[in-house]
Length: 113
Length: 111
Image (cartoon, rainbow over all chains, first blue to last red; front, side, top):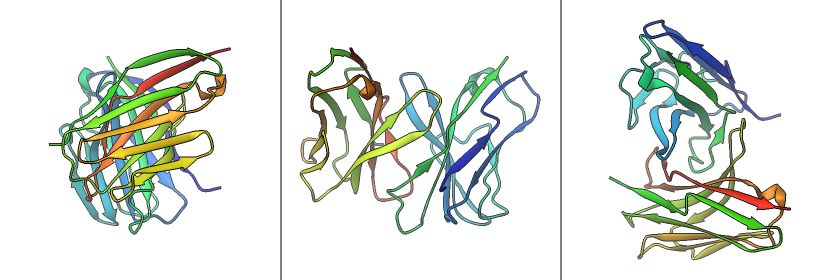
């Protein structure tokens, strides 16, 4: 089954404790992206990647890092989480020739205390 | 910068009533527009995609229209059912790698 998986699905942590949210897709997609969703603001893009070792900033990259060492994985790293990063995070992927067809993961709800 | 607005933020209707969801965007230079459905605890599911050259797109009980010049799209859901209860998101694609999303309309269909 074609899917995008994220782990963990729920996470409560404390300010300053480094964390990683993993994202994996099994569709051999070149393009992967991270979004955060906050009430009243819709989804905003954090980072995206067009292929292995190619990443670029989205609209709200501050406080986040990403890496793309393998095609299937695109982890989101918070080196020093702060309460304003409490949000619902979505990973998405698509074929580079069909960027308008994005497959979304189920989301990770992160709370930073 | 593209701004996408969805009104109303929430909507509650009795079963069987037709739904009308609105989306407006500030920059008409778009490549396409999509409507997504979001269910609690799940990701987003694409419902309809309208290319900039199209005026509307239909799938079953769903119909989406696009007026690019006025920066508006409308999603119609005919004969609503309780299973249609979800949040509906509008997203525009400016022909790069970023989708600009609206905040969504949360729909409740009462049995």
